[in-house]
View 1 (tube, helix red, strand yellow):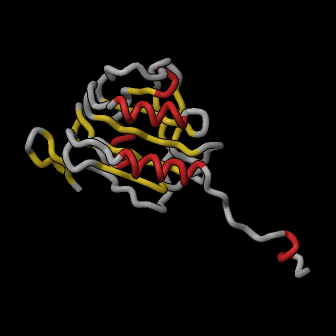
View 2 (tube, one colour):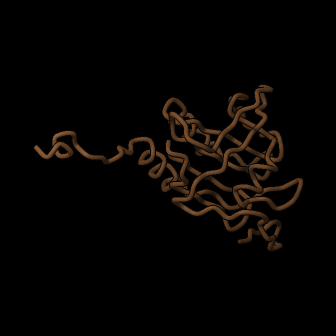
Length: 165
């Protein structure tokens, strides 16, 4: 896979993640100084918003994150400190390991622009990697998929059916 940086095609290094596959566990140092393991089973849906530059976070994307912040763990990961004010407990510039494991690593100073949604079971249910690091995300699709992931109800057997009643 590749992305475009300032008109030049750059290969994305390391692992490419597929929908339905298991998310890797990653230790991330957040801006509040806390170290947190993310990407595996969790009590809420997890969202990894990976941004290449300090000015990559749009106001519209931030609004969606704020709208769902109580219902999902939403993390902003960037190679640079973001211009927009975000919660330091959910923001990190410790991007290299995550970028490599999520398949969006370009080099030690840059990552592709991407969003990953991981369900409570630790599986990828949505991913978007922009073709160019300057491109905007499909925010309508992202919000739809995030809402679906948050409100997903696991289908299982009904007790009466299981008992043969």
